Image (cartoon, rainbow, N blue to C red; front, side):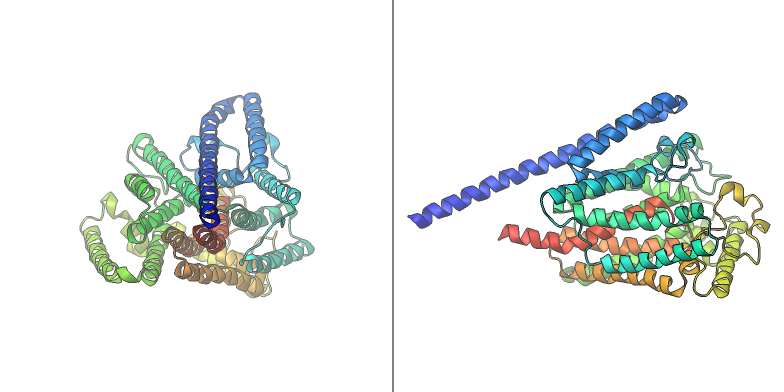
Length: 514
């Protein structure tokens, strides 16, 4: 009898726990919706009030205070706010203005320039304060670093050395702050992602934000392409910021994973509905490096899915053969219809490897990058241990000979090059360069092993996505400021924090089932 009563008692506890968990899930989802809706409602007001700096300042203060109160109470909301900023708001002026590029998140208005930190940096500080304060009150560990902490600290130690040497050898302090800020943002994003993600539902909400943001930016791209430019791209190398194409390519990677590995039905359906808009916006934005990165990302996805999905290997191989045949047919069509809009990606990729093979890009852009890379290599030879931060790299062939107005377009052109992989090599020398690849290699190895060992297909999908996105990030970084753009490094940092947390989430789920 006592045994039977114990069973009923345990079942009652389990039912109560399930109800509490369901209530908590609904509360967190509702909170996310409220914050998202409030942001979308206030954002147009802030843009509209841009003509009235007084009203804009008042609204900005109201939004900042509201977010600070919510983040202090629920630090997890801060993670979603940071992710939303990275996915939705430009940190550089786009070729064609949209209302999101006038929101002051990654920079200050001219009247407030010179403050010690950007608005997004203040959000980071608020999140860390709220997290540490709550854990201090609960007598918990203040911050956890995860398995990537050592590679990150080694990397940042080399950055600190570059700062010290730069200051000691005449580097400009203001330039140093500008150069190192992306390193700090990436690391703190990693800490936030690792410490705040504690349930599978948090990851699902995060990827809902990824999907909806990609759809929103794609609609922006369609509006610019079809309404503002009337479908005519003459005179435009791109219609949105460079990093937008990277997020579109990452969206396609996520959609392919939904198709190949695990179909989260509602998210897959939403992604399917958004896919045509994303494809049109990606092509219209005309970023060559992102096409190459997308191809590499798809190859990584296929290899990892083939490794973890043993039962479906025959279908995967058959699908690969079909894709290869379709790709060959598409390339053939490109040569038959070289002026068609849908064939532009083929000639864009060709122009990277053979600039003289097509007129898709102004040859000046390719020559500029070649000379810039040669200048960086020359600087490395002259300073084999690293130049340090805050000093212009050497230019045996001045870049102003190729682009006389470059300083008007980019005031940091002789400090931060397009090739941010060489940038780190030039600034930090061989040890810092090794630290970068040690971090990247740790991510790829750990992500691949995690994908193999996890049993939850959705968490497996997330691990594969993060590994593929890391590959894409590095490929684009060889050509297009990728490790210097705030949006990219913040997004990558959040993903790395999520990656390291996946095994613990899987263990927690198994414990709950037991």
